[in-house]
Length: 630
Image 1 (cartoon, rainbow, N blue to C red):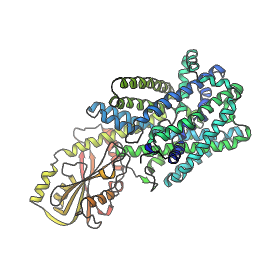
Image 2: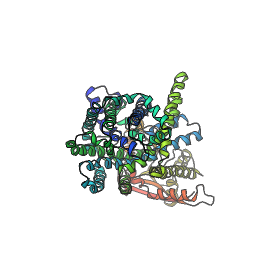
Image 3: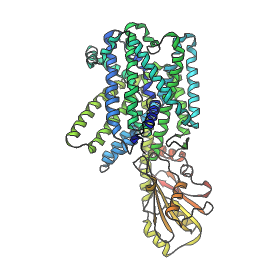
Image 4: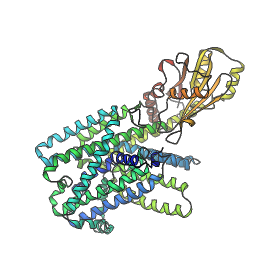
């Protein structure tokens, strides 16, 4: 049963708790630094009632418009067979524009750029979250300040080191810890609101409007700090497949949103009564005796937030590989029961190194806040633009006009946040942009290179059906056993077969042409995965289709083939796999610029071997090398 169709109250309650732990970890820890950065940031803003209420009003309506209306109410509807995330949304949009190559290119570019910026967010989130939590140590005693950075680095090393063991066991603790976190921050907010209840007036949007009219430039710049309350909003959509739409919505409305609003307004009330608390308004919400346990709880919550974004980076990388935008990587499954829990060593250690360098370079959460926000807001804009494309097909007439009008308003909000964050590029915003641009360039180069390589390989290819007929009419020397030729094309002769006939001049008794392809849906039902077609007396074609969130494996495919075609027996000692291995060389008239060709060649050489990626027994593989000019 899909998670979106769960009707058992106990199961739904479990999914709600799980969603609170995983989906809302990032946005749930944003009160640690958001309001502090609005007043302690790089813009001078007087700490008075007018400004406090104006900022609180901006935070309130930012949460309501962006999270509640856009993501929870609209974007969650755009599910790709129950799965969410910007790449799933891109796949939906690609169907809408499939008839126009130019539109398809721009849709793909928007989706991939949004996914690439997630790499930058995956580096900044652990750094700023854990640092902001550990900075509560300063509230306890300034003599401990020199230990903040070392402790943060130790926490990061421990967090990334445990990734290879999986998150299944730790994940069971996520929900209860985060539920405790939200209850605590909500209660702290209530305690302080009681002391200054006038702060609740900030729900009136006129406070935000008046604040903009009074300080138009300052208010615009401060949107770059206000947006910190929205960090992690993409997780709402990306984790829909794990928890389902109802669980994510219940978690938001029943606990997360009330707790966040109470805490933000509690911090505002504290600043009205005790302005000197601006040094760290979150921790000063609590009495002195509660600071040590609150630091421990905050650190646990920020580690959970970091874990969620790290797992998200693994998931996005896996989807990019299956969609053909990223070279093959070593992917390890960390749970036999939970689908989707994966570990990618290369991504993991790159993130750890980047996070440590980031902590050492920026040193404080305030400095990191200047770098944070650009990636988040740019991805928000990409999501809204892709939602326009998807809505153009799913709505007609008046509903379409109404949806476009609503998305237009939300796009204006996204662009306001994004344009404000552009001003922070020189303060550190360049970092996630740089990471995103590098990842985007690599992914688009890989996609372009694979497309050109496939076109080059198709030149001069012979049709498969006619070639099989000629082989059966005039067979070469046949030898005992079964050969499997891996090929990306379903209608042309594999190059490995031609090279084998040319050099070895023999053919096995049974021949299988195996193609593994990826669909634009997240998961393909098992009964629809494998298609077997008999092409002659001893020739067979097998096409296996996987979803972009699945990991293909040859042994599982062959096991399914034996049930569909009993005469095919894949004995390990009697089966040989034939693969083509291409070496990229410069053509007389290159189809790629020199730097992109070298980048593509480098990625191709360092991609995980086909045998490892598709789980093919390496001692049964014959690779036929060839040079391809690009």
